[in-house]
Image (cartoon, rainbow, N blue to C red; front, side, top):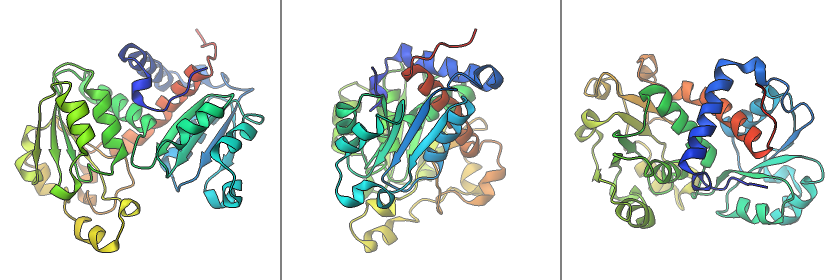
Length: 307
Protein backbone atom coordinates (compact mmCIF):
# COMPACT_ATOMS: atom_id res chain seq x y z
CA UNK A 1 0.00 0.00 0.00
CA UNK A 2 1.33 3.42 -0.98
CA UNK A 3 0.64 6.85 0.55
CA UNK A 4 1.47 10.31 -0.80
CA UNK A 5 3.05 12.62 1.76
CA UNK A 6 5.46 14.54 -0.49
CA UNK A 7 6.09 14.92 -4.22
CA UNK A 8 9.37 13.11 -3.54
CA UNK A 9 7.37 9.96 -2.77
CA UNK A 10 7.07 9.67 -6.56
CA UNK A 11 10.03 9.11 -8.85
CA UNK A 12 10.39 11.27 -11.94
CA UNK A 13 9.15 8.37 -14.09
CA UNK A 14 6.15 7.90 -11.75
CA UNK A 15 5.42 11.65 -11.98
CA UNK A 16 5.53 11.50 -15.77
CA UNK A 17 3.29 8.42 -15.75
CA UNK A 18 0.79 10.17 -13.47
CA UNK A 19 0.70 13.26 -15.69
CA UNK A 20 0.27 11.08 -18.80
CA UNK A 21 -2.74 9.48 -17.12
CA UNK A 22 -4.13 12.91 -16.16
CA UNK A 23 -3.74 14.00 -19.79
CA UNK A 24 -5.72 10.97 -20.96
CA UNK A 25 -8.43 11.66 -18.35
CA UNK A 26 -8.75 15.22 -19.67
CA UNK A 27 -9.09 13.97 -23.25
CA UNK A 28 -11.36 11.01 -22.48
CA UNK A 29 -13.32 11.66 -19.26
CA UNK A 30 -16.13 9.22 -20.12
CA UNK A 31 -13.63 6.37 -20.30
CA UNK A 32 -12.93 6.75 -16.55
CA UNK A 33 -16.46 7.58 -15.38
CA UNK A 34 -17.06 4.24 -13.63
CA UNK A 35 -13.57 3.14 -12.61
CA UNK A 36 -14.28 3.76 -8.91
CA UNK A 37 -17.97 2.83 -8.73
CA UNK A 38 -17.45 0.74 -5.61
CA UNK A 39 -14.89 3.03 -3.89
CA UNK A 40 -15.18 5.70 -1.17
CA UNK A 41 -12.93 8.68 -0.50
CA UNK A 42 -12.77 10.18 3.01
CA UNK A 43 -11.91 13.91 3.11
CA UNK A 44 -10.48 14.70 6.55
CA UNK A 45 -10.03 18.46 6.56
CA UNK A 46 -8.98 19.91 9.92
CA UNK A 47 -8.33 23.28 8.23
CA UNK A 48 -10.52 25.41 5.93
CA UNK A 49 -10.29 24.68 2.21
CA UNK A 50 -12.35 25.32 -0.89
CA UNK A 51 -10.35 24.26 -3.94
CA UNK A 52 -8.45 21.31 -2.52
CA UNK A 53 -11.42 19.70 -0.76
CA UNK A 54 -13.89 20.25 -3.58
CA UNK A 55 -11.30 19.21 -6.15
CA UNK A 56 -10.81 15.88 -4.36
CA UNK A 57 -14.56 15.41 -4.10
CA UNK A 58 -15.09 16.25 -7.78
CA UNK A 59 -12.25 13.90 -8.73
CA UNK A 60 -13.75 10.94 -6.87
CA UNK A 61 -17.28 11.62 -8.13
CA UNK A 62 -15.99 11.95 -11.71
CA UNK A 63 -14.58 8.44 -11.29
CA UNK A 64 -17.96 7.14 -10.12
CA UNK A 65 -16.98 6.89 -6.44
CA UNK A 66 -18.53 8.32 -3.28
CA UNK A 67 -17.24 10.84 -0.75
CA UNK A 68 -17.59 11.13 3.02
CA UNK A 69 -15.78 13.18 5.62
CA UNK A 70 -15.65 16.52 7.42
CA UNK A 71 -14.59 20.04 6.46
CA UNK A 72 -13.37 21.40 9.79
CA UNK A 73 -11.88 20.10 13.03
CA UNK A 74 -14.88 21.52 14.93
CA UNK A 75 -17.21 19.10 13.17
CA UNK A 76 -15.06 16.05 13.93
CA UNK A 77 -14.12 14.11 17.05
CA UNK A 78 -10.89 16.13 17.12
CA UNK A 79 -13.01 18.65 19.04
CA UNK A 80 -13.30 15.99 21.73
CA UNK A 81 -9.57 15.34 21.74
CA UNK A 82 -9.36 12.33 19.41
CA UNK A 83 -5.91 11.80 17.85
CA UNK A 84 -5.36 11.64 14.09
CA UNK A 85 -4.16 8.04 14.54
CA UNK A 86 -7.43 6.98 16.12
CA UNK A 87 -9.45 8.95 13.58
CA UNK A 88 -7.77 7.27 10.61
CA UNK A 89 -8.16 3.83 12.18
CA UNK A 90 -11.91 4.42 12.40
CA UNK A 91 -12.17 6.03 8.95
CA UNK A 92 -10.30 3.04 7.47
CA UNK A 93 -13.39 0.98 8.35
CA UNK A 94 -15.59 3.22 6.19
CA UNK A 95 -13.48 4.33 3.22
CA UNK A 96 -10.98 2.98 0.69
CA UNK A 97 -8.71 6.05 0.54
CA UNK A 98 -8.36 9.29 2.53
CA UNK A 99 -7.20 12.85 1.86
CA UNK A 100 -6.12 14.75 4.98
CA UNK A 101 -5.43 18.45 5.50
CA UNK A 102 -4.10 19.48 8.89
CA UNK A 103 -2.56 22.66 10.36
CA UNK A 104 0.20 20.66 12.09
CA UNK A 105 3.20 19.61 10.04
CA UNK A 106 3.55 15.85 9.87
CA UNK A 107 -0.02 15.03 10.94
CA UNK A 108 -0.89 13.20 7.68
CA UNK A 109 2.35 11.20 8.03
CA UNK A 110 1.33 10.16 11.55
CA UNK A 111 -2.08 9.16 10.18
CA UNK A 112 -0.53 7.13 7.37
CA UNK A 113 1.48 5.08 9.87
CA UNK A 114 -1.74 3.98 11.59
CA UNK A 115 -3.88 3.62 8.47
CA UNK A 116 -4.98 0.50 6.63
CA UNK A 117 -5.97 2.57 3.56
CA UNK A 118 -3.88 4.93 1.37
CA UNK A 119 -3.56 8.45 2.82
CA UNK A 120 -2.94 11.55 0.71
CA UNK A 121 -1.42 14.63 2.33
CA UNK A 122 -3.75 17.46 1.25
CA UNK A 123 -1.60 20.05 3.04
CA UNK A 124 0.10 20.04 6.43
CA UNK A 125 0.84 23.42 7.97
CA UNK A 126 3.60 25.30 6.15
CA UNK A 127 5.30 22.05 5.16
CA UNK A 128 4.01 20.18 2.08
CA UNK A 129 1.11 20.29 -0.37
CA UNK A 130 1.94 17.50 -2.83
CA UNK A 131 -1.30 17.41 -4.83
CA UNK A 132 -1.01 21.16 -5.47
CA UNK A 133 2.50 20.45 -6.72
CA UNK A 134 1.19 17.74 -9.04
CA UNK A 135 -1.36 20.28 -10.30
CA UNK A 136 1.38 22.87 -10.85
CA UNK A 137 3.59 20.39 -12.71
CA UNK A 138 0.74 19.28 -14.98
CA UNK A 139 -0.15 22.91 -15.72
CA UNK A 140 3.43 23.87 -16.56
CA UNK A 141 3.82 20.81 -18.80
CA UNK A 142 0.60 21.66 -20.64
CA UNK A 143 1.64 25.27 -21.17
CA UNK A 144 5.36 24.94 -21.91
CA UNK A 145 5.55 21.34 -23.15
CA UNK A 146 8.56 20.63 -20.92
CA UNK A 147 10.30 21.38 -17.63
CA UNK A 148 13.89 21.30 -18.85
CA UNK A 149 15.60 24.68 -19.09
CA UNK A 150 12.77 26.80 -17.67
CA UNK A 151 13.25 29.87 -15.48
CA UNK A 152 10.59 29.80 -12.77
CA UNK A 153 9.83 32.91 -10.71
CA UNK A 154 8.32 32.33 -7.26
CA UNK A 155 6.86 35.49 -5.78
CA UNK A 156 5.38 36.47 -2.41
CA UNK A 157 5.36 34.40 0.76
CA UNK A 158 8.23 31.98 0.20
CA UNK A 159 8.76 31.37 3.92
CA UNK A 160 5.40 29.90 4.91
CA UNK A 161 4.18 28.91 1.44
CA UNK A 162 4.00 25.11 1.43
CA UNK A 163 3.08 25.11 -2.26
CA UNK A 164 6.38 26.85 -3.04
CA UNK A 165 8.43 24.42 -0.95
CA UNK A 166 6.86 21.38 -2.59
CA UNK A 167 7.21 22.81 -6.10
CA UNK A 168 10.91 23.59 -5.66
CA UNK A 169 11.59 20.07 -4.37
CA UNK A 170 9.80 18.53 -7.35
CA UNK A 171 11.30 20.72 -10.07
CA UNK A 172 14.95 20.39 -9.03
CA UNK A 173 14.87 16.84 -10.40
CA UNK A 174 14.54 18.15 -13.96
CA UNK A 175 17.66 19.37 -15.84
CA UNK A 176 18.33 23.03 -16.53
CA UNK A 177 15.80 24.46 -14.08
CA UNK A 178 16.56 27.92 -12.71
CA UNK A 179 14.69 29.81 -9.99
CA UNK A 180 14.20 33.48 -9.29
CA UNK A 181 12.99 33.89 -5.69
CA UNK A 182 11.07 37.15 -5.30
CA UNK A 183 10.19 38.13 -1.74
CA UNK A 184 10.85 40.65 1.03
CA UNK A 185 13.66 39.61 3.35
CA UNK A 186 11.20 38.59 6.08
CA UNK A 187 9.48 36.08 3.77
CA UNK A 188 12.45 34.46 2.03
CA UNK A 189 12.59 30.70 1.54
CA UNK A 190 13.62 28.79 4.67
CA UNK A 191 17.30 27.89 4.97
CA UNK A 192 16.54 24.17 4.64
CA UNK A 193 15.08 24.78 1.16
CA UNK A 194 17.93 27.09 0.18
CA UNK A 195 20.75 24.88 1.48
CA UNK A 196 19.38 21.32 1.44
CA UNK A 197 17.47 21.53 -1.84
CA UNK A 198 18.85 24.33 -4.05
CA UNK A 199 22.51 24.55 -3.02
CA UNK A 200 22.97 20.82 -2.47
CA UNK A 201 21.55 20.04 -5.92
CA UNK A 202 23.57 22.86 -7.53
CA UNK A 203 20.43 24.56 -8.84
CA UNK A 204 21.04 28.13 -10.04
CA UNK A 205 18.87 30.68 -8.24
CA UNK A 206 18.77 34.37 -7.48
CA UNK A 207 16.91 36.22 -4.73
CA UNK A 208 15.42 39.64 -5.48
CA UNK A 209 13.00 41.91 -3.70
CA UNK A 210 11.37 43.74 -6.60
CA UNK A 211 9.14 41.85 -9.05
CA UNK A 212 9.93 44.49 -11.70
CA UNK A 213 13.61 43.49 -11.59
CA UNK A 214 12.87 39.86 -12.45
CA UNK A 215 9.68 39.52 -14.48
CA UNK A 216 11.29 39.95 -17.91
CA UNK A 217 13.54 36.87 -17.31
CA UNK A 218 10.76 34.44 -16.46
CA UNK A 219 9.11 31.60 -18.37
CA UNK A 220 6.61 31.00 -15.54
CA UNK A 221 5.61 33.33 -12.70
CA UNK A 222 4.16 31.57 -9.66
CA UNK A 223 2.40 34.12 -7.44
CA UNK A 224 1.45 33.38 -3.82
CA UNK A 225 -0.58 35.21 -1.24
CA UNK A 226 0.74 36.36 2.11
CA UNK A 227 -1.05 33.96 4.44
CA UNK A 228 -2.65 35.64 7.44
CA UNK A 229 -3.08 32.27 9.19
CA UNK A 230 0.71 31.68 9.26
CA UNK A 231 1.56 34.96 11.03
CA UNK A 232 1.95 35.25 14.77
CA UNK A 233 0.68 38.83 14.89
CA UNK A 234 -1.63 41.03 12.83
CA UNK A 235 0.86 43.90 12.58
CA UNK A 236 3.39 41.84 10.61
CA UNK A 237 0.67 40.51 8.32
CA UNK A 238 -0.69 43.99 7.53
CA UNK A 239 2.83 45.23 6.77
CA UNK A 240 3.51 42.38 4.32
CA UNK A 241 0.14 41.62 2.71
CA UNK A 242 0.30 44.11 -0.18
CA UNK A 243 4.04 43.93 -0.79
CA UNK A 244 3.47 42.53 -4.29
CA UNK A 245 0.61 43.29 -6.64
CA UNK A 246 0.82 41.93 -10.19
CA UNK A 247 -0.98 44.33 -12.51
CA UNK A 248 -1.30 45.12 -16.21
CA UNK A 249 1.74 47.41 -16.22
CA UNK A 250 4.01 44.68 -14.82
CA UNK A 251 2.60 42.12 -17.26
CA UNK A 252 3.70 44.39 -20.13
CA UNK A 253 7.30 43.87 -18.98
CA UNK A 254 7.01 40.06 -19.27
CA UNK A 255 7.63 37.71 -22.19
CA UNK A 256 4.72 37.08 -24.55
CA UNK A 257 4.74 33.41 -23.51
CA UNK A 258 5.31 33.91 -19.78
CA UNK A 259 2.42 32.28 -17.93
CA UNK A 260 1.10 33.26 -14.50
CA UNK A 261 0.14 30.57 -12.00
CA UNK A 262 -1.30 30.88 -8.48
CA UNK A 263 -2.42 28.11 -6.09
CA UNK A 264 -5.37 30.31 -5.02
CA UNK A 265 -7.11 31.81 -3.18
CA UNK A 266 -5.78 35.21 -4.16
CA UNK A 267 -6.35 38.32 -2.10
CA UNK A 268 -4.72 41.46 -3.57
CA UNK A 269 -1.56 40.01 -5.12
CA UNK A 270 -3.00 39.71 -8.64
CA UNK A 271 -5.14 42.56 -9.90
CA UNK A 272 -8.42 41.44 -11.48
CA UNK A 273 -7.39 43.28 -14.66
CA UNK A 274 -4.79 40.55 -15.22
CA UNK A 275 -7.55 37.92 -15.46
CA UNK A 276 -8.23 38.98 -19.07
CA UNK A 277 -4.62 38.43 -20.10
CA UNK A 278 -4.28 35.14 -22.05
CA UNK A 279 -1.16 34.38 -19.99
CA UNK A 280 -3.21 34.27 -16.76
CA UNK A 281 -3.63 30.54 -16.16
CA UNK A 282 -4.57 30.24 -12.48
CA UNK A 283 -8.22 29.32 -13.05
CA UNK A 284 -7.26 26.76 -15.71
CA UNK A 285 -4.70 25.50 -13.19
CA UNK A 286 -7.55 24.74 -10.76
CA UNK A 287 -9.21 22.58 -13.43
CA UNK A 288 -6.00 20.62 -13.98
CA UNK A 289 -6.10 19.87 -10.25
CA UNK A 290 -9.18 17.70 -10.74
CA UNK A 291 -7.54 15.63 -13.50
CA UNK A 292 -4.34 15.04 -11.56
CA UNK A 293 -6.23 14.04 -8.38
CA UNK A 294 -8.33 11.62 -10.43
CA UNK A 295 -5.11 10.07 -11.74
CA UNK A 296 -3.61 9.91 -8.24
CA UNK A 297 -6.69 8.21 -6.76
CA UNK A 298 -6.60 5.60 -9.53
CA UNK A 299 -2.89 4.94 -8.99
CA UNK A 300 -3.06 4.67 -5.19
CA UNK A 301 -6.11 2.42 -5.30
CA UNK A 302 -4.38 0.32 -7.99
CA UNK A 303 -7.58 0.35 -10.01
CA UNK A 304 -7.48 -1.52 -13.31
CA UNK A 305 -7.42 1.19 -15.95
CA UNK A 306 -9.74 1.04 -18.97
CA UNK A 307 -8.14 0.31 -22.34
